[in-house]
Length: 342
Image (cartoon, rainbow, N blue to C red; front, side, top):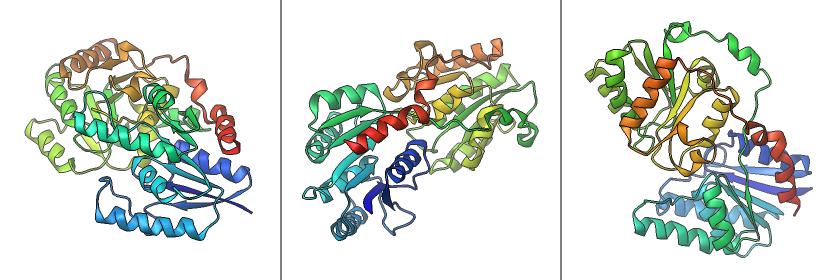
């Protein structure tokens, strides 16, 4: 039987991770999966660590011991370690990422390092799959992979209509509350502190304004202290259980994302298929999907506040997105199949 290897730093429970694996299986491949959970390999976010060096050596041995026809690595750290480990392999190497690790406005040394390492590793890559137009154009024009593809997708849940029965009472929310939802890891990049700063002003006038932050991370205790310090306990709550994501997307009025860079488009796509209004920072992952009226500049708290207040005044809880169908998994499966066959 043909063999393929799929490598990701976390378990492949995201939309595209699932479809990559499922497509390989449909094509008759036995798929081995490597991630932090199932192989005792640990990929850390910082590239130059002893743990990543150990992971690189283990990964290289696994690849040597198996005759993989396709090796697919997902996300930056896995992409770097895997492509260094497979430089002398005859396998087809595929690298996918939502966006490159460097971005406009970043400290120049960090930007040039990210740009150059991706460019160098593209020499050992058959196909780069990228999730935003800005990076797609750069990779197409500047990098050396045989193929560069632009793909982003979202899984449409079959029981989406049943989600309408979800109740706000479970979260101590009233029907008249206007609920903003944020989804993301609690860290500096996701910038939830900006959301709390805005809510301090908004709740002075709009007592029915609520914010739910869905996520976990190093800043949880810090954010909770800010919530208590400024008396936001009745208006802001942090929920760590990501299993509640679709339920919360359904009951919220508006999704807000304040990422300073490297945003996750899946959250926006899930909100779009539910016709939820979205307010998000003007970064490359988001401006691909949204119109200018939905965007605000990174750290522009005043514009975010004004847009949130406008939504509350208008009681805006519905927005039509005309291009969502092209992001359905069914639409992109054909593209992914062609990538594996090419």
